[in-house]
Image (cartoon, rainbow, N blue to C red):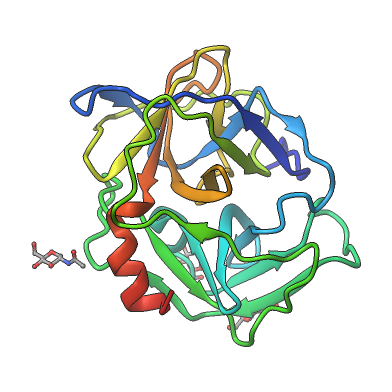
Amino acid sequence: MMNRVPLLLFVLGYSFGLPSSLSLSGDGTGTRIIGGDEVVPTSVPYQAAVLLNGTFVCGGSLISTKVVLTAGHCAVAAVFAVVVLGAHDLRTIESTQQRFNTSDILVHENYTEFLENDVALVLLPEAAQLTTSVQIVELAPTSAPSYTGSSAYLTGWGMTHDASDTSPYLLVRPSNVCTSGVGVVGACHSDSGGPLVVDGVQVGIVSFGSGSCVDESPTGFVRVSYYRDWILEHAGV
Ligand SMILES: *[C@@H]1O[C@H](CO)[C@@H](O)[C@H](O)[C@H]1NC(C)=O
Ligand SMILES: *[C@@H]1O[C@H](CO)[C@@H](O)[C@H](O)[C@H]1NC(C)=O
Ligand SMILES: *[C@@H]1O[C@H](CO)[C@@H](O)[C@H](O)[C@H]1NC(C)=O
C-alpha cells in the first residue's frame, strides 16, 4: 500500500489475440498498470475508484448512474465500499469528485478464488450526477467480436513498479480476454476491477496478471460480452 501511485494512469496500444488454451501465471490478487503515463485529469470520466472497506484500492467503471462494475476478487471480502467518481488524485478531495459509501455489493454467484466469474457490481445509494468528469461507459454487447488485434485503453491507480508476488497458474477461459505484454505494458496490483476499453466500449475488466508485472507477460481480463446478460439482469443495463 505504501508504494501506491494514486494518479490515474493509462496504457495504450495493447494487442489481443492469445490462444484460448494458453496458460498464464497469475498471483490472483489483482494487477496494476506498468508502462503507463499520467492521464489528463478526469479525461477518463467512466473510471471509478472502489475503496474496499474504505481503504483497499480497486478500479471500476460507471455503467449506469447507480452501478459500478468491478472484479469479483476486489469485492468478495468487502463489508462496504467507498466509490470515488471523477477523481484524478485519490489523495485529495477534488472538486470533480463524487463519493459514495455503500454495502450493496453483488459478487457473481459462481465466483471462485481461481478467478472464475471474476465480476461484481457495486450499487450506489443514490444516482451519480453526470458531469464532464463523470460519465457512463458503454459495455460490449453479447454479440461483440473477439477484438483480436485491437488496440485498447487501460486505466487505473495501480502501482507502477513491481512487488514480485509468487504465482499459481491460471488457465485462460472463453470468459477471459488477454492482452500482449510486449513493451512491458500491462496491469498490476490495484488496477484490478478497472476497465479495458476499445473505441469507447468496455470489453474487459482487469482480473489477473503475472506475479512479476514487468516481465512482458500478458494481462488477463474478464470478457464483458460473456457476462453481458448477467450484468443486464442485475444492473438493469
Ligand atoms: C473488510 O472487513 C471485514 C470485516 O472487518 C474483513 O473480514 C474483510 O477481510 C475486509 N475486507 C477487505 C478487502 O479488506
Ligand atoms: C461507510 O459505511 C460503513 C457502514 O456501512 C461505515 O462503517 C464506514 O465507516 C463508512 N465509511 C466512510 C468512509 O464513510
Ligand atoms: C452458476 O453455476 C450453476 C451450476 O453450474 C449454474 O446452474 C448457474 O446457471 C450458474 N449461474 C450463472 C449466473 O452463471
